[in-house]
Amino acid sequence: MKPITQEKDTLGFVGIGYMGRPIARRLLEAGFKLIAYDRDHSKAEELIRFGGTVATSVSELSSTCNIVLSCLPNDEAVLETYEGANGVFAQVNPGSVVIDMSTVYATVGVRMPAAGAAFEINARQSDEGQEQDFSAVILQMEKQAHLDSPDRRTHVGVTSTEN
Image 1 (cartoon, rainbow, N blue to C red):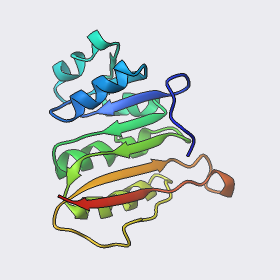
Image 2: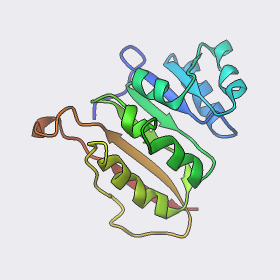
Image 3: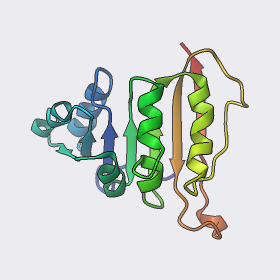
Image 4: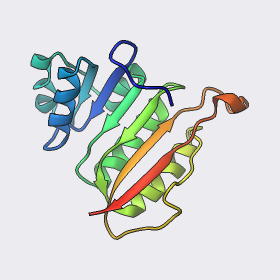
């Protein structure tokens, strides 16, 4: 993966809550272009004064940014954000990077790569399939540009750590 830089990358951030807000704010203060989305639009709008912009939907954010980050409160919010026709997996552009920093049960971490594969995202699990009762899952992936182009294939890595 190429380094993420302020000059060439636009970040999208889903989940501007207790943990997401300070992360997104620090990214803006570091000079990154950032588009925010939260189900409570007023939370995303708080980032405007720091230079952020606001997306009206996950779909809009995912199709606009080349780096999508999320920090969501629970399993349901993660699955709702990533799966389905308007989710991140369906809307993210080829070559984009997706990083989920949500704290969820390990079963969601196992399910995410499979859900991504439905949208032409190659996946591999880096924690050797070992599940913990509760984990912070970091999911990083790049959507393939073409299924038949091996040099453009990318992988999903899931790393779980016990709390």
